[in-house]
Amino acid sequence: MVVLRKNLSVEKGEEVLFEDVRYFFYITNDREMAVEQVVFEANDRCNQENLIKQLKSGVRALHAPVNTLDANWAYMVMVSLAWTIKAWMALSLPLSPRWRERHEAERENWLRMKFRTFLNSVINVPAQVIKTGRQVVIRFLSWKPQQIVFFRMLDGL
Image (tube, rainbow, N blue to C red; front, side, top):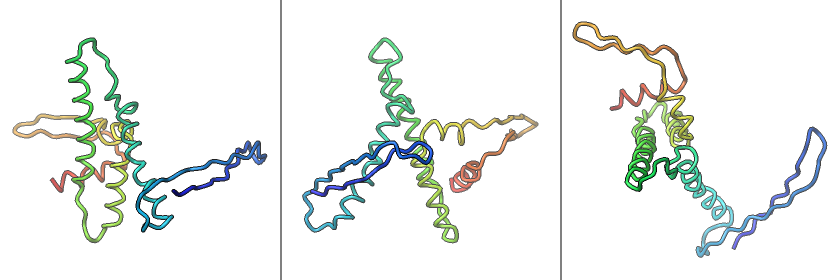
């Protein structure tokens, strides 16, 4: 068992309102792992809790908006597919050797991004679709920083 004590102070402006002490308990059966490594592994795994939270509140996959069981099941499947597509897009980002660190950071950013943020920064982009002769032209009407990463993913596909 590893016990981590955090001394926190609640402040308003420059004035300390009160001191707060919190204890975090980490239980493991791996006796060979270092104490710092136990805490790091546990905090790294906490990302799964964030994913569950996103599915509950961000994407609302566990929200039942319809009155029948089959319709609610279909809604949950559609929402979880949208979440899966977000993860698939992030994992399919190509990594070039020259910019490896930056590309890995962008991949990690997309993987950890909240679904609503992903929707607003990557998917919901105003565009104009023009059909001319034998081709379809898509013009983006605004620019967002995530579009560079999006175009790199398209080039990789």
